[in-house]
Length: 343
Image 1 (cartoon, helix red, strand yellow):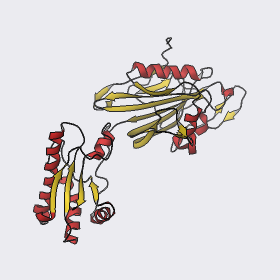
Image 2: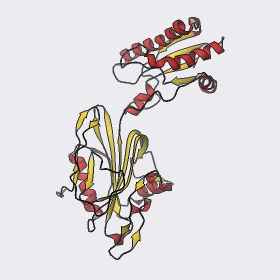
Image 3: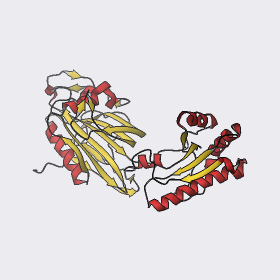
Image 4: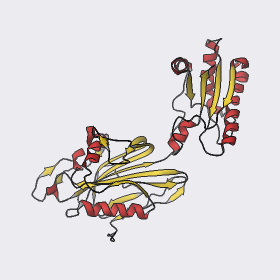
């Protein structure tokens, strides 16, 4: 591969577990004003001289990434779905910069920074693009800059989902491993609006793993009863433990109260309280820890709420019954739980 001008500057500075330093931006001034509130992502900055026309950033959201060329009904087949801090950005590059030049600069910058390619498309990528355009979901909630895309002849095109097109499109998706987790980045570059603009548009999608805010939803007695009737079990995420420990933390009080209320309202109800872990550490240590956590919940209900111990049995199954893949933190977080199961 021939060398390309370093027109894309990529910065990856790990301060702690996915803490990033936000460096000052060293890019050429865009021809028009960027979208209000938008800023270059600290991991990957814009192709020099580009205009940021679309921007969206959510602290916690879900996104998909293609893993192959297969498309069915304008939908990617077997995409990878991941959750975390989501950023979406659309740039328009300076007049005269081809989609190929812009794309190669992004690709080179990502690879040089250590990103591992998971999938890429070099030609006939329009079917992948049309999945993104399906119902314009890929730009849902995106803020747009003021102005329009203007051709040399004076024609104007609105700033909306159609800024990125299926013409001369190329796609690259890769991940950057960090501390057992992964950052996901997808770059798609194509002609901006129509070929007569003589400009390229680039769509960036970035998902960074982070700890999901917890304790925002409590499972009360009514919800517990409904879950047990429907499934025979229900997962509880309102019981909190420090990492590697089995002592129930004080913020678990509300969840324990809901469990106690259910048991008090149904005197004949008998349950298993089952501890689950992710797959970090050995199976033996996780089996022990999950058993200890389950028993801690039983003990808390007996001593704190006078629930008959004979109505409950604590069991630990470690990582043997996951709800999601343990390959990424979002899955491991779902797997670390206590379940209430009907006897």
